[in-house]
Image (cartoon, rainbow, N blue to C red; front, side, top):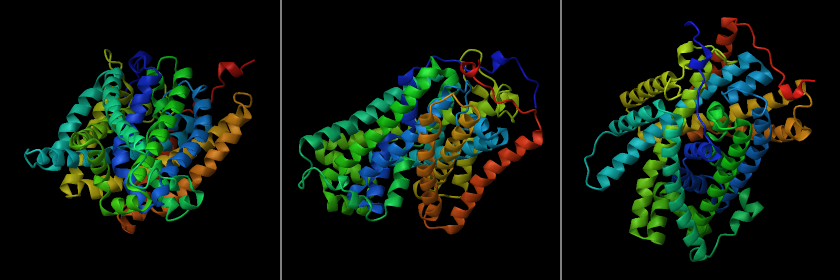
Length: 481
């Protein structure tokens, strides 16, 4: 471990408001990519025309999670989100284990979208008469741009993500409005979506797995605490706003898509070719120009997600290296902040290097960028992040039980308990169906399960091995007599 520099060299800076943080969190969810890719798959493999209701169920469960999560945010004056909260509730070793699990989960999803964007750019370029280059070259080009933005001040990333997010959401909302204004397709606006019996038909468990995948990264609101303006107000507001925007947008867009094709027609079209369902809908409803816009914005949507994930990974590494952090177990150089940009520049560069190594490995093993890189690693990230949310909810209950009076019973027990039940169900479904999500390979699923368990165990054991003096769980000033 290196010598600990002054605290000023580790403190991140920024004045992000609710809007900027919401932009980064929603951008990580890649709303256009979800509507174009996940929604058709959920319709085909899940519960058909009732799939849009899956987003309502997921939003409700995650809103219960957010109650305890934001209550903790008011009493934890530190970054690190999941890892710091788990450390406060379940102890420092569990917190470090959670940080390692978060790193693996976010690195997996970032690798997944690097594969997807390489393939998407190649298709876009060749469709318009450009050269047919290996997908890995396009992914590397994107990685360079992300590395440059991640190195700079966080507000630059916030502005870039804001522009890209507005564009991708706007084109889908225009499509939604036109479809609804026309009264849907030949069968009118879909009503099956609101039928409980239809929701439980087919494979509702698979539907919920694909639905919850669209919320990856929403908890990153707390990761930006040290770069937020008035974090005690900004973080809770941004968390609820991000959840409601993501859930509402997904549910509305999925319902409009089903309404255009009809209940049976939507299932048939999604089964035939899920990847082109949204593009064909946009071309039919908005004309050829609309289809081209969707194709271009799909690439920018994935780019926005990659940038957002890069920022999240960098801040987890920064927390693990910051000597002032409760989960600091890595070299303090990772916890340094840039003197001019106030960014975690060392952690950001490390994130870029690790991403390049993982991407090179995928190329060397000749993995398909969509069917293997994207599908496999996105699936493992969903499992890891659901596990982290479950651990965090348990930690919330444990923390407030030790410090009664810091939160209301609703915030400290009731809402987190409901979230624990919902998240435990999500966790069971994802683990049980992981082999299906990775192409039916039981051996690949087993390797990924071992990777996630191993990441948590490695962090826990490293924390115990270092034998640093445990940081006491402070009682906030508001609770002191």
